[in-house]
Length: 633
Image 1: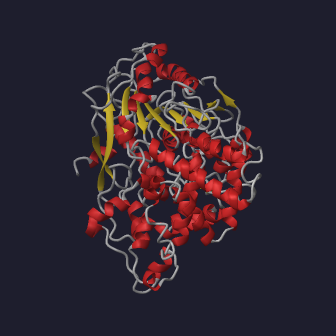
Image 2: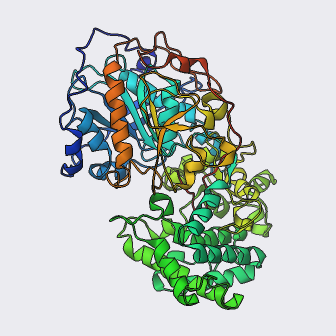
Image 3: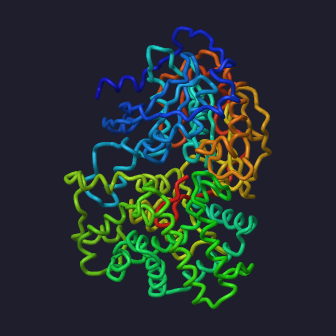
């Protein structure tokens, strides 16, 4: 273990000069990229780097972080492109890599591909487990899951990476950070934080505005539905949410039974949870998860495809709204506008159940029934294994019960085999990030029409259930990311921001369409290498596009204009790369601490080291949880 630690603080500084690479002579012309055969990446295997759990040195613990390397398109001296997977295990991304943008980027630029797994996801976990399932112990386990710790992970990796005796230092060859959604924000932040390491970044659907809560995600969805041919169906969704808000628990449970009884598949997915609601200690929260999961079914893939039809989409929205349209006789007033409320509620339940049944049938094992109706969460385990108040039937929060005399939690570290499957999940990790520095808690608008019931999706409800009860986190989420990096007003160089027209996360990006963002003009004219964009945004909003329109398996369809703009930018920036000294100082990971660098790369934008440039960052954005599960960016 100790032999790796000196590397964390050792510079790979300006070694001997590397022959200047001809970045204008790619393996294949860009026009050939679109017709190139799909590549198989089945043979690339996971590698590991040993990293400190805390880059600030409060503990000597280390962990193994996974990454993958593919050099089939690389010519030594060419760029190194790190594709950040973000808030998920990287295995599925690697398996499907041939269908994504990444091989095309590498082919067009003679690049080395690196796929990176984020700390606390997949198999990249600290090994030291918490003593118990208690909120305080679990929070202590996750305390090093921060934006800054994770940004330092990739900085350390880039400084120390070696491959086949070729020049790989960020001071010798350009390193490019590619990411979409939360990884897109990481791409933008990484370039600003460590410009001597990250020469350029592609920030797709980059949610850079860290806000306490986000009502806009659902607001823009509802507006888009109403403006693009789905108004009657959208109005029915709003009416159903209003019904749930006005109903008592008995009425709501009866309605969920209607949905469950639609098919054996849905009933099987729901399991016996519904039958035990009457005696469950956390009955209200479990009911909320069930209800919101049922309601979100029609919009389950909206974030990914919006109104597009692709070979890889199911068409959930069209199917569900088609059923509702048939029931109303395709009336512009929808189901709730053409029949009595009791009948409309039953019709909605049947349509929702049929839609969930269809999703289960069409997924071909890509999503489990349990995942569809709510993934395991640490709060469930805490409640199931609590002692004391649970036996007396008192309805108290996790924190209140923990404080009660004689109350204990089951051991975790002493029963690792049982604990790990509950603790080390994407759901828990992302919940913790949402409850702390990334923030972005998805909530319904406080007033007006809403796609989901307020009783189960208000800020107060979500905050208590996910943050306070699970981790005993009472501080307001969202720390200093906006102050440090700029949020909506982020000033950047050598960074392209791409968004989709209908992406509900667009509200939290520099291409935001909401008034609160006070958006800047957008340009598709490639800026000079190192030019810091303060008054304008170098970016593109893909017409008809959804979330990360240029990165997914449809990158060469709707996302093709963005792909071409990105490669045009690289053709401008890469030839300006010059050898430079890379910092030998590990960047601090605390609030407001920026990376040190003795000399930034030519064109790297030294201005970025002087703090946040441009206008004052906007306020509150928001959110990432919804439903029985969490909506990940």
